[in-house]
Image (cartoon, rainbow, N blue to C red; front, top):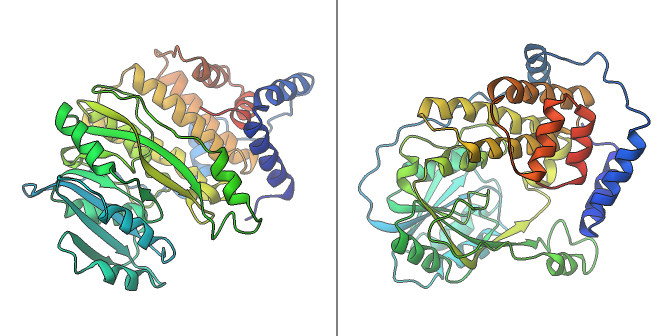
Length: 396
């Protein structure tokens, strides 16, 4: 299944409008035009059971829980860096070199999980096996969640630090994060990040495009804080206490597995801290899920994993508060954004399930966040077209 040319053009125009800060104007123009004509939503599932049946026929729910009890041995190093690898021959050395070269008096160990790579990734990993603070685990392919879980199960550091094998740690990152962790005794310590272009893939066809992309990016930094709830939604690039994984791991088979951070890991943290410096760099490349999911049936996984983790939260006894309600609205924004390029009946089925969540299970909650109020209003008022239109032209 491939996305239509018209939709690809629309997606490109959306990106350009957002870069030029014209998205809000375009949204209001589109809303004005649509106020004279609302396309009918006919013969679409309008109850949860029918919606789930339609979605499962389109792409099955993997159905895995994140709940898994670990029996960890006593820690013998400060930080365990977990690096899952699958067919990353072009990137893995840059990634590993950025970790190994970290200058700090804190002890760190690197667990590399070769997840059944079929290219020359394994031969590159062999260059690092002689190092005393490096271990390579070889396994058949289980996906990103399975590879991370293999590292978690053998982890022996006080803190875990996940680094995907095409990304880069900034010099001094471990030292900066650990200093804050030691000072505050925080369960999670976060820092700033920056995206950068993949010069050998997504941006190589047009000369200078990668350079332009890097120029228009900005540092996503956090304020220095010894006690904060403002952290980035990514699980990579953070120090996370191994204790937070005593009873959980990444649920298998899903895309968007990082949802476990905002829905499970961060809510269990007693204290978070952040450093004002940049610690991580995310590579933007064509092969990553964030670049390919828009026309794929598995984009529905963002809804599936939301529902699964909601159940797991209840089993784990994680309290639901105002912050968690706002987080759920952000998840609903992402769930909508992920499926709005798929067939209308699929996107509407996702809307029906989220409408039930908001109007039944979360009916007593309301947000004060101005952006989130739009999402809340469209769902509560059963305005499917309005929600789709708002999510297309905004970020949340």
